[in-house]
Length: 511
Image (cartoon, rainbow, N blue to C red; front, side):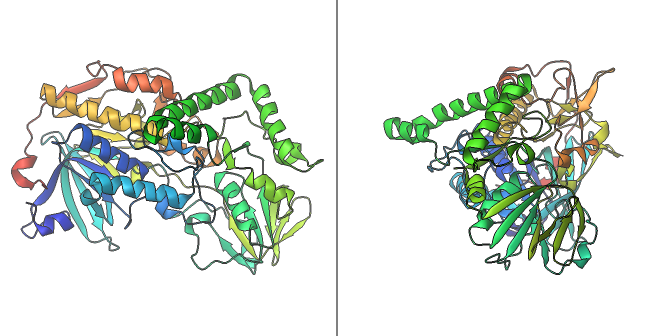
């Protein structure tokens, strides 16, 4: 049995470090899915999950703003191994959080989680064939303990949890109302009867506006440029019919594949025939808005469909709020904040009691952890991602960044399955180290080929991708599904070795 000191923290009273086979960093949607796959496929492997916050759920526990919901259908955003059983295909944040927590509890994953454990440094030693991970516990940055592991699995997502992107606006100190960012939504904020301006046009803004418009005096969505928005039914009628006919578990993969294929067709149409895709989306929006509404100004983006993520609203809630006069859209540039609100380039002043800056995310690779290999610090921007999930020159490490044109979980599930396949392969052949080695002359490109502002601001600090396999990181789930599951693990790109492993002689493994 594991001592109480080992279970609660990363060390014991006698200074012995806790050791696990696999250390998963992050207890959000990705981390819980990774732990489930590992526990199911390789039950003999010991593992722990480190979570910097004090709760399971990641994004879905962090974000508390009104109207938070999935922007993908839950048949593909949910786990492949655990059917989404609720009738709503576009689900609210609370339902998603409950789904993640139930998944963890039912599989016993919650017993492996160390809360308020933030990884600050991870050092690989080839001589010992293991990672030594420095962990900050609680709020005191001086309290650092260590763990060791054979394989480090980063499931931290790709943005900062402690703050969102908040540009400085001219004159914002003059505004006499309240300014809030959705990522730090105050629990005491009541918008009832208030005039609200939401700055932004992405998924957060289009979720906030209809939710706030239910009680606010009026909500204005102020956007610099439009976003593609598509209305879908909150409940998938085909899914409901199939569930009644064959049962929820049997219906789930059928509906899941239906949605995967429809999304793939939508993406390909947007990229290969953007005029057709644009016309289709425009015609759908035009039918949902009042006659004569200026669709071309407010809902006609300059870029091709899917160059940025296509946003989804359930049951046309945003368009209904606009049609009923509870919300409006202004497409213009901000010149300055005023005492009473925001003045835009046209000269109009948007009066507000509350301004919400839904201006996006700050990206952060590897959760901000510093990586070191044999004494040399890893510079992420100088590495190349093998299949978008391992780093060139970095042994025994995997990370997950989901799709930008489909559900995040589809990619996360492929990665976790691949990691288990890789670990099993290493066990069969007696290997203790696996490192991707990039060939000379590789033609590089950004890891995320995505024009959204939050990506463009930070992508130069992330690993690179390449134009050729297996260094290409694309947005094609169907192709990735085949390569992740069937590509050979004994190719020349992955170099295996068996250095002596001294870790277990000086560490304690949890039961």
